[in-house]
Image 1 (cartoon, rainbow, N blue to C red):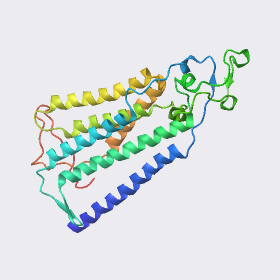
Image 2 (cartoon, rainbow, N blue to C red):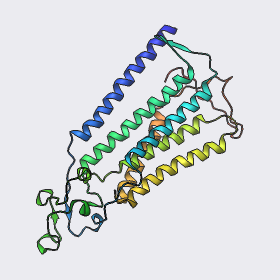
Image 3 (spheres, rainbow, N blue to C red):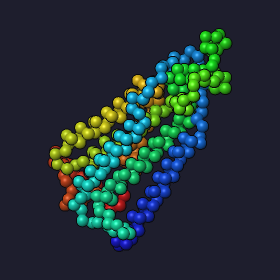
Image 4 (cartoon, rainbow, N blue to C red):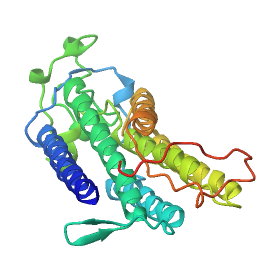
Length: 285
């Protein structure tokens, strides 16, 4: 039985590595090999006349808090809940304790969801091709918008060229819909909030749990709002991205996440809530 379980654990690990690697390659392919659709513009479109600004929340900061905070929570909560479990499993030459298997279950489910939201966002950006609010300031199109011939008409991408010096920002000038910052921050932080609600259940942590959940949600909310104030996205882009991230977080947590439950004699009961957990124990995710 132990040998069969070891094979099952190893097989699941290999399958997860292959699938997540495939998703990561698909994400890279949509960015490197799929040119985004270039939508034209109207000269009098005031929604494209905002100044160009740098990011309040940089991509690096977004990735760091979106990955580090959930992973840290997974590690701490699984160790606290499952550290006393005595059903260590040997897989090849390694002993795999229960808390490490629980951490792996949460981490892989979160990893799948993160790849899904990233891939979905890239597809939307490439297909829609909406100009960003700072389009005129960044591109400086060659057409003379004060000329009557360009008034009240749609200017196709082939009818103008950008006269501004080439920069990296010009490459994603037509990727306003939908907001990747909003989608990523909403998914990662709402998933973290759902996870804490289920796993941070030891005594005396109710207020702390709700406080951490609030901080996580507000961090994602601040990130989304900053995309509007930085003139990186239209408000509808941010709303769509935030809703997409929240939806993915709820779906992945509800139907795509398996967690390792502690045994009944080790399971802490949240007396402040008054309702014990009754989810069936699973040895593997």
